[in-house]
Picture 1 (cartoon, rainbow over the protein chains, first blue to last red):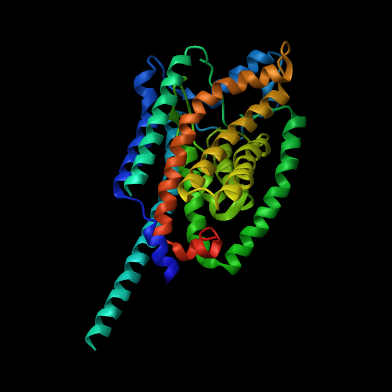
Picture 2 (cartoon, each protein chain N blue to C red):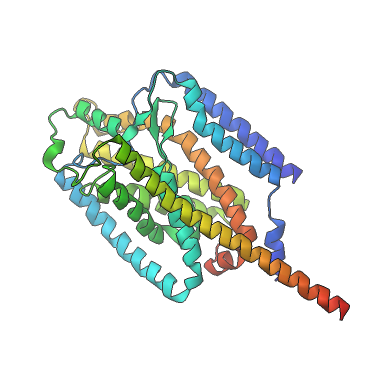
Length: 118
Length: 254
């Protein structure tokens, strides 16, 4: 129990959390405002171009992907699916933990209340 | 608490300064770098080589994962959380100052909670998803991509940052640097893999490495910082709401 109160003390200030989230958003959105005339194409594709520049004779067609999404729409749908799967896992875990912690707190409080009365 | 906020403020200023620095050099490095090596973009020999390196890590990872699932089934929740982070973050293509986009790895949390071997398995699941359905990386390069994102980054971050630092530095700093390192090392390894397979005809291996690395530092450092901050926030949430799980994993306490 003592370890739990100790960790509870480590909880950081809500303002720090807000500042952290703002910083993350700024770091990610920052290039959008700075770099003009760019579509921010995937670096994976462009990296392959660098290989072509260094080794123009290299044949990357010795093997190809077994399946390709028919178009950009399907591809973005699959990317969204990947993020959704991850998001569900994260939301479930964080929500479950939060609810459990709250439940424990209420039980402890209820016990101490009834103990004081009786 | 006030003291803590001030530290964050200093950190924020530093991040801004770094970004300004990147801004000024952005013209010089206009070429982006990739994170996952595309299907076919490694010669057969190198593809096999990286597969062979990856296989033992997957093996140990599977054994550790099975042990966790049977002996500590209550950790399934945090396993799901760690895997979820890798899935979400590696699906996000974030714009970068070089005019391309790149993505975070999300392996930091799993590395801190479960170590590099379990992370090797979790990270590879995300890589397989992207290789099979998204033409993002491929089966021939799965070994190489696993060695960089799922194995190498987490391994270096765990043994060279998290383990040595955790008892000496404040928790938030150790967590931040672990996630930061896992992300950056991933790109360093990808760079090395490409340079090894495609040494520059003129400047050789080192020249190739610099070609690939020069750009990636700019794309990647802001992302690594953002990822580090995110993992710090999530880790703090876990400290408050899942202290028993963290204790059981030996992540909390001395």
